[in-house]
Image (cartoon, helix red, strand yellow):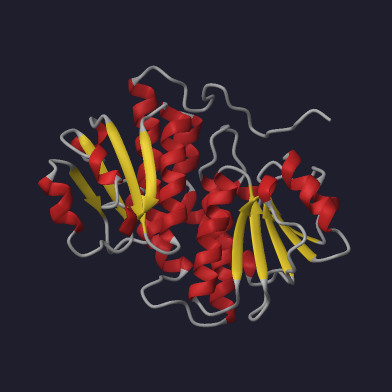
Length: 302
């Protein structure tokens, strides 16, 4: 078993621990604050998911940006930065630019890195750190931590599960066999609505990173506006969360394979894609722990 596969399997326990840690952490956004969430790569997609979930919960206007494109002059009450390594250049530069002007909080896996001094508050989720270059459990644990903060501050949006319930779904996702039609497909399109759209984006990225797969990601209701043209036999349309009415028929009409675990928490469903990415990498002779052209952290030269 690859190291990545081993780390994927630990996510249910990581999420439960994240919920416990969030209950005693004082730096998370408060209801009514205007908040921006930022990160790079996978962390940006987790930021997108959290921002949509926080707004849907009615806890305040929440935006998400990649750190390299953050509008630093826009007023916010708090900025949340997600950085597994704690060394990502764009994140550190942004936190430096914001220092003294807006409250900042960072989520990281490594307490021995520059982000500890760059943010006003830091949540260290070191039990979810990874040896693999490809992010799996840290990303979802960071999102679980933020979700738990929302739970503590008010009711969740209709249909959104608690972190505890998501962890139960995750226990099935780490063991349930993958459908052969999905494993043997040649192309995968990931779709989601609301906060699940960020997870659809992350699913596509994970498949590209680990397995060099041909993937695309879109808001679910945008699928009919062009992306459906790529779907056909031996190609998958994978929907995170609620399945839009009529979409199953559209996928069937063009000969595609539909995947929709509509009752599962979307974050738990992402685990299935992580496992699929590892399986595909192995079938191609790739090392999922050391993907091509990638490093654990992007540190730019001055």
